[in-house]
Amino acid sequence: MVNASGRRRVGVAVVGLGGAVATTAVAGVELMRRGANSMSGLPLADVAVPGLAGYEDLVFGGWDVNGQSLAAAAAEHHVLNDNQLADTEDALSRVTPWKAVASSAFCRRVGGSNMREMRGHRAAIDAIISDIQQFKVANDLDDVVMINLASTERTPVEGEALRTADGFQRALDQDDPDIGPAMLYAAAAIEAGVAYGNFTPSVAADIPGLTELAERRGVPVAGKDGKTGQTLLKTVLAPALRARALHVDGWFSTNILGNRDGQALEDPDSLKSKLGTKGNVLDSILGYKVEDHLVDIRYYRPRGDDKEAWDNIDVSGFLGHRMQIKVNFLCKDSVLAAPLVLEIARVLDLARQRGEGGPQEQLSLFFKAPMTAGRRAPEHAFHRQERMLSDWLEGNAGR
Image 1: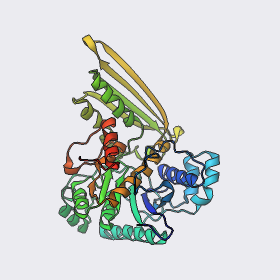
Image 2 (image 1 turned 90 degrees about the vertical axis):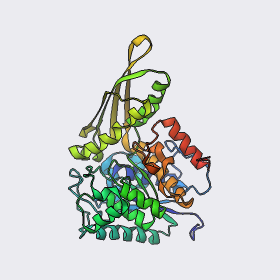
Image 3 (image 1 turned 180 degrees about the vertical axis):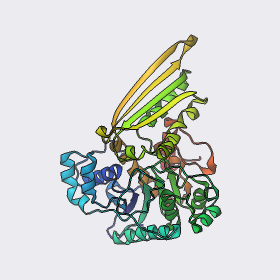
Image 4 (image 1 turned 60 degrees about the vertical axis):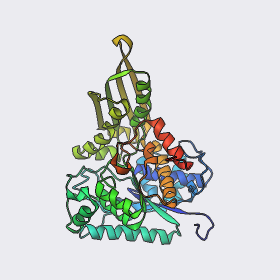
């Protein structure tokens, strides 16, 4: 299906549109339209698969607690250089976020005035769906994908609302306080038949109740927590250490960052959500529990979006001799994340075209805590995840 322009246009409805990752992604697509951006950092740039949307055919809209234009937001985030800000200012100044569904009870450190006052969960879901429908009509879109890039929420108490689809529906009717904004956005996407990807550690479509609902309705869902820096390297190095029979005695990881994501993680409950997705990867790959696997994340304002990830790895080799590996990754958080957001949106849209619903395991490559069908243990080793995605794109998955 294509619209009147003759090209298939895909809307990307972003939760957290005014954040550093989202503004970087939108600016990147705008620069591509102007012919001023290379394909560096885009993992699927050279992949030619029928139905896979072009980068320039992605149209952005979405919600944020901060109502300023994306041009103003991008200037504050200090990710884009002066030339990139100037080249994209006109386009980004025309995009302002819709009023967001938010909760200080779930995300204490980040707030704003661009929020909806809603009376109950059902009303919030209806408002989100209405925004999506208006977005689709106003931009002559063939389909829409929702991506969650909002700040990390605290992990809710696991009650009936999270266990089954029917229990979740009852909890919505009762305005259960354990249902947070991330779950409401995911529920709205599934109800609207819109593919959904969760790039955050927040609990959303990965709860059994919403996963079951996505499977019932044939809606593609994926997540959670984008794998961009330190965990990316961990999923590359750990398989190599295992293949060489080098025993990991301890792995200490620390991060410092000063952007809005780091600010949100100053809240201990939000930090706990993040550490949960980062900490489960290593044991799965190695096949044994690393007793001294420590992960530390600190908000350090002077760094802004320039994140530093430092790892110390203690290993034992032949005859019990001990060795160390040091990794120091000085990276730009949003520059690593934004391309992945574009690829996730494109693959989710393709899954929707192929009629595939429920967890999209082929997207495991991009997440720290991948969703899986049947809630089986996810694959974390990078090279195997890469093969899963390649096979799926080529139509060979499961053969």
